[in-house]
Length: 354
Image: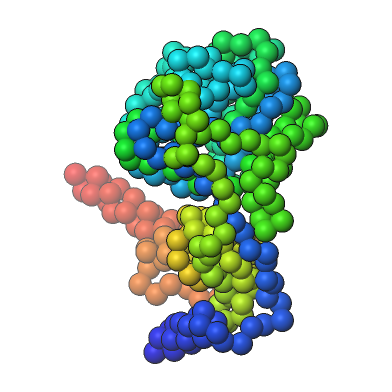
């Protein structure tokens, strides 16, 4: 009954907080979070979202929030004058139901899965591309290698992302938190969180939509910041206190606050991952009970008691009434010796009769 009342109280608090209940003073309202859409529609449409960097060495990091099931998404590099026409482009990797690339790859499956942060390193000096990924909400040291492939250029003035469609269906990628730096990370070319203070072309980013076969410009592709579809998101404590309130663009990721401490428990996770949000959402913390460490002194005492009891039990097995007063061990020894003496005397007596 008590557990039922506690659960009911928590659910009630959650409902109140989600639908306009009192907001605690500790709640924080975050700036609206938008995303960028890269879209290609119509047959043979190629949309490239890129920047020019100078020497071909750069690291591109971005959150891939969502991808359409149709079409292709990937990365491009090389000579900016050759962009837009696949037959002339020297370095590109586009992934969908198969791989379309200027390179020979060891993989033939899609490596760009939504819900991850990707780090693509273009290294013209050492002639290699590397692709690493981690969960969007994971720390930077969680990156794991996905792909390494040789590039075909020794210098390049372009790095970027692209969507491509071969048929009438559209290809769309939703990205966030785009960072482009040199490979040491010391120089920053692009830093775009796609917030209300950003534009799609921050960091001298450019958009080129073409027919991938002819290279002619197309009106069917584009890249833009999506700010019209926003989801209301709240993070709520067990007592109904609103910890954070924010608006997140469709398919976006909410920024989770620090979960409140709970005595005797450890914060495990939020009830759901705050990624790929497509509707108004409420998140609440999940806790697990802390493991209690055994008391060593208590264990030793119990061990001694068990040992003493065992000795007493073994000793008293030779007599009907075990001795009291803590002398069980001595009395038992005497009892055992007495029994042995009796058995020996009987045996001697029988031998004499014979």
